[in-house]
Amino acid sequence: MREFSAPPVPALPALRRQALRHHLLAEVRRPGRRPRRVRVLVPVAAALAVVVAVGVVAQPWAPRSAPLVVPVVQGERVGATLLLNRMAVAAADKPMPPPGEGGYVYIKSRGAFAELGDGPARLRPVHEREIWIPRDERGDGLLRQPFFDAPIVGVIPENETLTDVTPNAALVDLPDDPDALLAKLYGEREDRGRGTSRDGAAFTAIGDILRESLVPPRTSAALYRAAAKIPGVEVVRGVTDAAGRRGIAVAHTERSRRDEWIFDERTFDYLGERSYLVADTADGPPGTVLGTTAVLQRAVVAQLGQRPQR
Picture (spheres, rainbow, N blue to C red):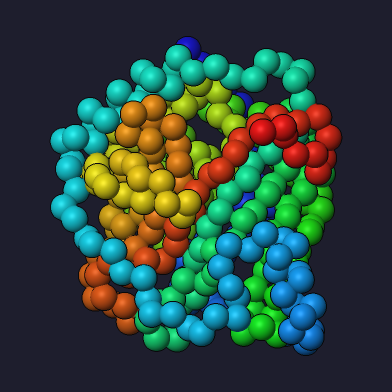
């Protein structure tokens, strides 16, 4: 078991600043900031061709839709500890790609996030996202995702090289002991979750690791056991991710917002995340969805930009 006095691990926000700075989840967590809009005028036919080419799930020129509202159900606090410890046992038995199989972690996901600060929150169009992260050594990564600025005049496919990215191995080099792991996350509160409580910051940090990293089985187990020790963590049943898959969620509520990690109820595989309001605010009534994601594929690949075989 790794001692907690081990050398410090690079903080996850380093990757978020490098690789995820275009991730619209930042808009949800910093509601006071509005994204700078970039308008590119293109012919309608050309815009349609771009949308088809990048595999957009929703139509970015569609009229502004009504806010997406989901039921706010009572969470189960006692059940959360039991579920997370069951998940830890299952995670420890799962296989990990062998060393040397490939130099990059590839993650494909789907998501939609709300733009806040101008009346009720409405989700932007669902879009797919691919990221390549160096597996073992610091180096360049790659991010591919479309960027929207509705209506039709603002469809911009985006392909960005990420320089000097913290490798996946450093991000998941965490204590195996859940108490030591949680103490580490509490200690990094200032870097990982400004403006939130230490429990909320720790929950956010674990969610960041689960969402866009390839985590070794023992570390996954430690993350789940550490999450079980966070006060206020709950279980929410009958949850749906951005791909329409139903699952069970581990949730944490802070102020007027609930964040959920969604898992397959049978295998405990991570499916995605969901975030929504639990009280009336300027951004909408209880149940207003602020963000929804789904991880579609994780793999190790040999080259930057290479997609795994299905």
